[in-house]
Image (cartoon, rainbow, N blue to C red; front, side, top):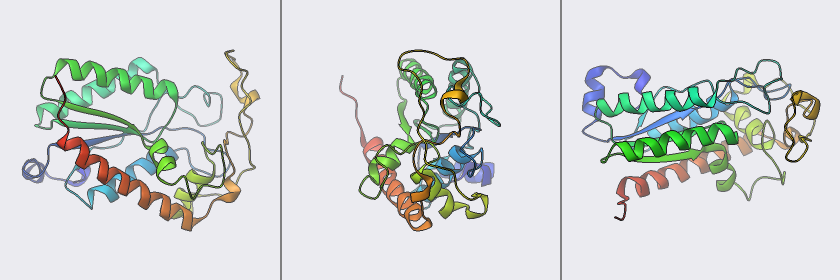
Length: 241
């Protein structure tokens, strides 16, 4: 049940089928020379659409902005503060709660640590404030990597590398503009730096050259399967007191 496509009558009817909603978070962020700035949002939203086609679950409109630290100097990246993301997540959940939803899955296609921590903080706060609410926080990229670990050739694949390039080749091949060289960031350990692009020139973490459309299709299918299994566990979960 894709909320952007539903009328209010359809939404009301949908509540009879499910009280579970995915809230997808992405980013507007560089992804090398070859992938669009909306890569994180595209991936998570499309996978959720596929998941919703398999079982009744709401999918809220995606959030296209995230906390982007390591890529903040790269052209095209638009970042927001952790406090902004935390407040936005809270507002969206509370609004959906008032509409009758009770099981919330905040799922992010953007895997930045600070970004994920902001969602975790918001989720923990809401969990304490609403006694009949269920909450889960998922990094969709980590789920995809875990589900497809036997297919991935690049040992340390991450940002704009083998997995993300493969998935875009499958989902939106027209948006993939060639490729980028294999690269890994070289940030100093423990030390914060001002000029981040100096330590990560091309904004790639992995090897896009190992990507293929066939891998992308399989990555997406495996991720959908993992999400369907998780929803079943999540909806039946009863917290111990």
